[in-house]
Image (cartoon, rainbow, N blue to C red):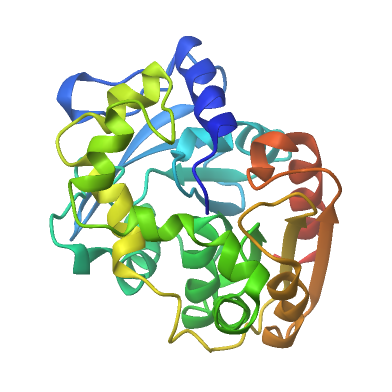
Length: 302
């Protein structure tokens, strides 16, 4: 789950076409980005900022971003889903939404963003829905799909393997251990990595991301996801139809965890590995990701 300069650049480009921040709140405004509507989702934990698209009566799809992205980074997939008649919502997750930004590291343990999935669905009035996640969003989605299998119709995980496979790779695979060393820097106590990043990196943040992560507590909240989690304790297998999209040039995920993920899914399972694509699959291979996602949703009965 590495910082991706490409993701930063793509978000900056989106911001230049109409996604801006509103003062200190950092609320994403998508009103001038064709087809996307800003949304605020109230839950017991606070209010999540989100972008939404598609007919309100359409089949429901929830998309979860990772680091350092926001909900709007799903733009291509959101618009593709809307064109196919789906109702799609992409929230800014815990810590990324100013209205849900607790200060304790423990509040970013995966159990909390997993519970957020259910709370967001409840607030939206969604009984059943399809779940999509990339990077940390994939980590959340794997756990939520297992825990809420009666409500999650299908799972599409991008880049990050099932956490059982990923944790095993971290324990036993030197390639994965090397690929995950960047997490040690992110896990240092605040404000050590924050000061380095905000002073110019690494990673280097383009201006629009820098503005958003410069808001009080924003970058610390994003890094607290790393501080709070070691990926262990999530061995429950997935029983619902699952698509896993991985890539051959991912610097953060070793092949061992990708190929072992099949052992953690008992329901219908499809693995797609994209050649010459890095970690940030939804933007680096936007069209392919959208096509695979729509194929997967179509294959799963409503």
